[in-house]
Length: 382
Image 1 (tube, rainbow, N blue to C red):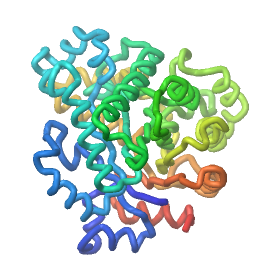
Image 2: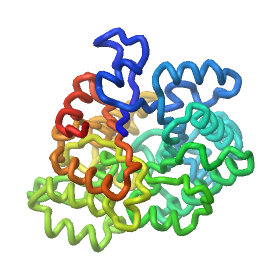
Image 3: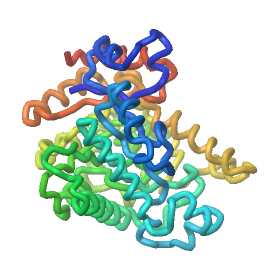
Image 4: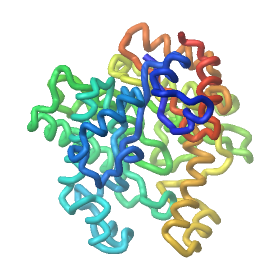
């Protein structure tokens, strides 16, 4: 199964009546939409459910990506809640952003999205549960990565319980695909070890929880040190495991190989390979600057963001760096990876996991049609 993230630009080149025509032309099984883009997260989806379903069917939506909020961990666990209030500019702003001060609105919205995914007979609901700042790069993390990871696992269980209490989780409902967080600028479940910990704790009687490996997010961890002339992990020492140190030593002089070994280490983990629901495919150039460390911009980039006058200007400053150096979502082969090697990885997973899906996540390219055509041609999976 192959899917693509939906962007309105797909209609620019040709006047498709529905996305079915687009999918036939590109050999796709459907589209994925980010629900907050389609229907703002403060909107009650049940007020216009039939309209929403009609729109999603017209777009041939087969995967629904959840709406998400910044700092859901510290909000729900009340860790450093005063800090959160300070950063948002008051408790009223926190309540406005999350819908309330209890988390009820968040879980209600996610449950509505999941029920809509069920009625669509969607392939998956992508539960991208991450902890990141509302302005990328302005604030450093104050809760440990381990504590954030544990809170995320608790929140996934809380979501499963919420669905089961309302009879929304059944044998026939969509899988819940937990997407890995991006390194450096957000925290959450990131590695194979993190997912193993998650599975050791979850009560999931219908075995709905799958892994959504976003290759671009794994590549966030890597950079090229121009002084040492080698590739390495652009991360605090506390986040670099012994195995990561070994990989740096073995492949640092071969940046492309380091990137692919890092992907294999996580994605091809023997304990998890049958639990992989989807690979989110895109490429990323190795950075030569570690822009973010522990969530905060480094050096003069931080000085520049805090000198800006308004929240909007600061937000745009951080997002521009994210989209250019981290979440660039280039077609495979335009960054660090060899499409032939990624294809081999896909086929290796597929041999033991025939339910594997592929998502062509090229949402930040200026020419959407050209980007997806390039990636499809280079992979040649059909």
